[in-house]
Length: 163
Image 1 (cartoon, rainbow, N blue to C red):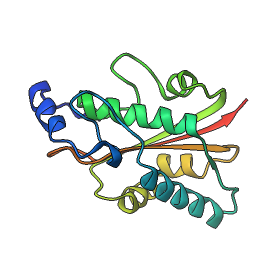
Image 2: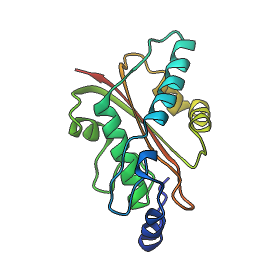
Image 3: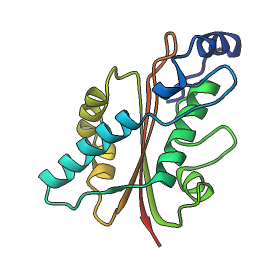
Image 4: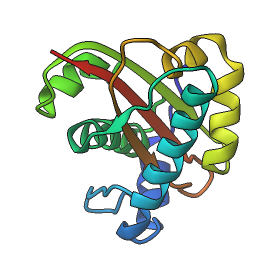
């Protein structure tokens, strides 16, 4: 499913963005990582993995950057998809961020009001749950853009195994 907002409406919404420290997209296009959301989401992912006898994933700064860039791109361009309008896939974005990956997966979530609710929704979706509990993954990145007017928030989880 792809969500598309009219460009003028999206720019208006973005001009009303939360401060950058909250992980917001600004009218100048800057987008920053929200460390509290990254930590909270990573703890929930690792709690689920531990409950299923799997090792925890290490939060990786390069994967955080890839996840955040994708969350920001979706928010700023008004779409919701694993593939960017330019054709960039999760694996391409991870490599572009400087992470040498042999295995990559991505979860995206839109409109859940909190990290807890987003995580609950991901865990009841078979494909998203499989990504969270995938054996062989070693690293994790989280991206987040808060609600912008009537759209969002956007959550991105990137899972990878380095080569």
